[in-house]
Image (tube, rainbow, N blue to C red; front, top):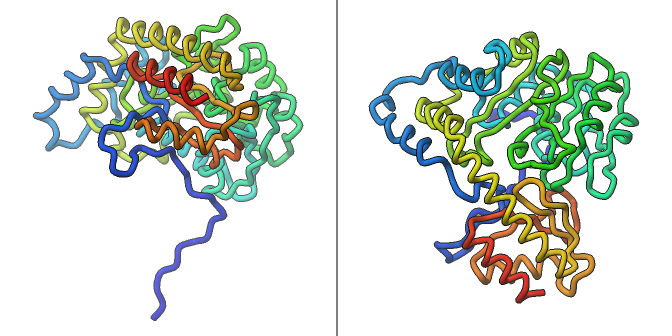
Length: 358
């Protein structure tokens, strides 16, 4: 009997970090770059207050959230699209702009989903070498060919925690052909306080060939609700919208996101918490001769080439103490782990264990 056959695509399935440890119910998860403080109490209340609408379909246009984004960031409504996480916006971009055998350029240690969505849509992925785990605009430009349609950069980059300065980003866009779409992933931008940094949204509000994605999963603490958004020219947004399902965002998620954007005090508290504890963690890692990125986003890529234990041994030691770190095998970064900046208690415990283990 002949059975349906799925098409074959040469793609390595996304490999995320662990969320649980065997036989441990109270493990501390520092593997997914989630918010240390969780979501705004106002966002939580807005979510709970939506019980009366859960039997109804959500607004297909997510108009309330579009209005709030437009108001907060001074953007035209026609330049905004809402997605089920920024992942979905990235997927829309690949569907809208890539044809089989087109080329996409991705930084060597860029977010795994860039290459996965590109390959799903038949494109060939070209990896631009990084310089000491930092995206390098010169190697990106060296990878450009007449087949290049799309360039991805995350700024700051996950998982390396490094960033491109505002001048570097502007230079990259200037030197790319005008018909190449530059997608800038702003997932961690709210955490960054460095004077040489500007987000993609701040740099390209008037650009016609840049797509900026943002998420509510990180500093806003709404990862489980799957909500993000994109900003670009009306022409790009119209192209993406063809692929958007009619009910991709739930009503409770939309209302929680609106409330999160309204709570500036909670955002400020998160930034202050992250700045304080990322500096504390960086001091500890430096003292222990662990190579890592400078404090920037809400995570560190720790490399252990100068330490007595390797990354697998250190992962196991933390797991014994009920803390989950992120292995870097999927990114092909050897002898390394990534850690998220956690709550006060979680960060204190992490620092204590680093001192003890190394």
